[in-house]
Length: 151
Image 1 (spheres, helix red, strand yellow):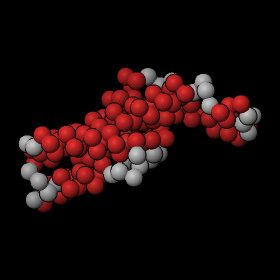
Image 2 (cartoon, one colour):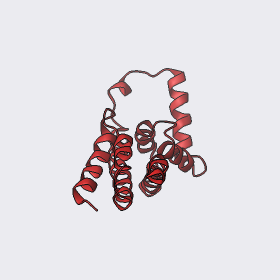
Image 3 (spheres, helix red, strand yellow):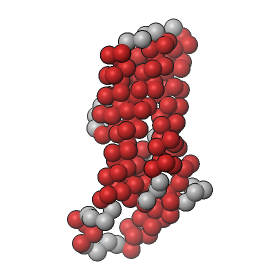
Image 4 (cartoon, one colour):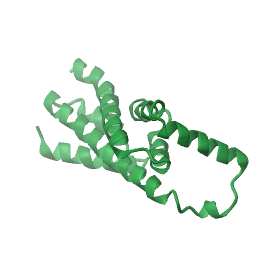
């Protein structure tokens, strides 16, 4: 296993979680052409890096929920209803975890948006982090599996 490749995969995971122009999926696909033991390490490193990056967004949402420049302006009734509904979904034990898992594994709704909203909604870190890590691992594994089997 190449430690440099795994380290770069971890850094790419963090970077792509914060900068949408970077693609962790492209890195995973490129790694699929290499040895299988390295591929598994790359998938796990990408998932861990993405989780760290999304945790930064989560914490930004959590710490910034009380201070927003737009909070000084009145919000529309429609925006208030939507915000209340999403907050309810993310804080609920029944709908919050599946929403985070869906965002982390299939990307709908976008995980970046869910990460910030989950933090602002007050979802627990111990719920968010494992679901994000598991979902990203599943996502990258399913992405590279057809290519890894082919080689």
